[in-house]
Length: 131
Ligand SMILES: CC(C)(COP(=O)(O)OP(=O)(O)OC[C@H]1O[C@@H](n2cnc3c(N)ncnc32)[C@H](O)[C@@H]1OP(=O)(O)O)[C@@H](O)C(=O)NCCC(=O)NCCS
Picture 1: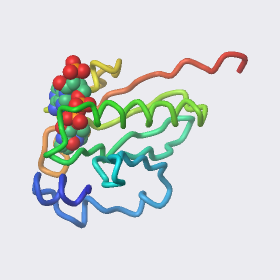
Picture 2 (picture 1 turned 90 degrees about the horizontal axis):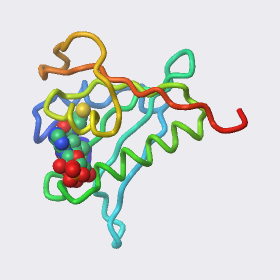
Picture 3 (picture 1 turned 180 degrees about the vertical axis):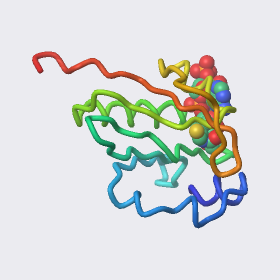
């Protein structure tokens, strides 16, 4: 899935796409009724109650049907369940408005990562009621 999107489609080197951080992440997987994988994403714990959202990918043939939104919703739900205070991410600039619509705000200047322009974005999470 990630290989198809990031390596085959976007040309990111496979050794950058797969990293040791995967082992410590929360992963979500979207599947169709037949169990076929449609998309994925992950949350990587950072210091101080921050989670870094990344590797959000939907198969090209399945885009524009709400799969990416469902993955983002599931990741934010998982982050709240973990008691995270903030979710940060490095958005590909082409996807920044996708995250803006979910309430993420840009932070700092744009930068290059894996040969692609990126923008750091952050979403503070309200503390759970009663916490
Ligand atoms: C970005 C990505 C995950 C979106 O997945 P998707 O399944 O197509 O998204 P959805 O169908 O759930 O779209 C949800 C909303 O976001 C919008 N949207 C989707 N992709 C967008 C993009 N790249 N930029 C801006 N808005 C986008 C949709 O128009 C839709 O808006 P609406 O609710 O007003 O109709 C998908 O395009 C993808 O995998 N891209 C390649 C990998 C990538 O760039 N990942 C992000 C790395 S930061």
